[in-house]
Length: 466
Image 1 (tube, helix red, strand yellow):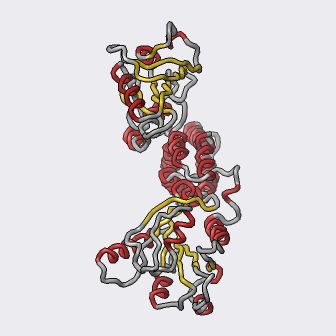
Image 2: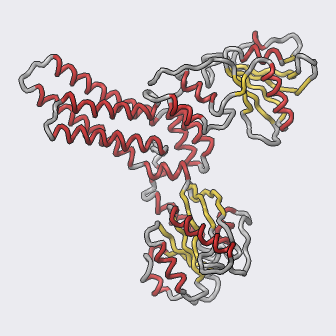
Image 3: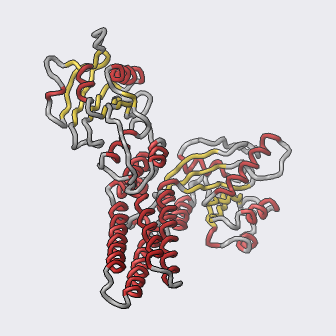
């Protein structure tokens, strides 16, 4: 890990979402957290400096200069090192209005605290050894989790499942590198070069197998973490917006009998059997002279090109058109589910002709009006990306972070270099450079080897009070 420095001044920020609520929390962390809080806290003769750790106290926050009372509060006192940041932490629980929370924060800042940077509380937890970098990233994943499975995945990473696995791999690599150095410096056998090369290649294959096992979970983990980009595609007025509204359980999109009502794409998240879908309701794809609708159609084509999954909607009350066939052709390369909507109306669509153009197993018949077929659609979505109930394996360690996945691929490539180097009879001292590189790359996942610039970039993505 690079040499890192941190000014242990006292920071403060609002740790609850903006807006009206029952309670708002202003958090302080640092060597002077108790001193700063004590200056603005009133409760008879009680001083926060003397109270036991991990206790909560009733009182008021006031302005020491004007003696004006700001708010009635409950103040939690937590002394280092048994806190999230391993520093003294004070949390002021005040009334949740925007004005009251901001006034409490301003008084704290005026009396010795500094406004925290985004993610600075979690950054201090990392720098003080409370958590590693992958666990720090899991904090944000937990906050942003959109389904119960995504939340469980983040909790596993926060508990250190991934960290433990990565550190075990690094430990094995380090032991091997140490043995290689001993063999080179103090050879006991004539064939030490051959034995050392065999040791390196065996360890490379072993570690690569573990990395491959992790990478096999990457697609599922990434979906759980970021959501499945799902484009709802079809001609105008086939029921795309009705499908979106039904899945969201709210009237988000305008539904009319007039073709071309949806002029722009609408994005919303929805939980389908534990799979977070980033649903994109698109403008109907058709040729049009309407300038605004034409822009919407172009955006629909862009959404189609970026989609992980396409829900291709047809109206089974109408025959297949040339436009329908063009949409089938345009989505041939996508993961696709074909939805025959409006099955409550008389069938006018040639099913045999449709099945000759798409996989019959991908077809689902629905009626949004009567709520028919939606369960089958949801089951098919879940089965398409989580075959065999993979999301139910609560003991598996999933890798979901794009940064982690990229580093694992790089580490795997370094191991390939070790193997190819041994096979090409390269000197062992050159081959071990690639093994050391693999060790360093794995260390970047946990933060054991990381640059200051990366830390700044990662923690800047956090919310202010975290």
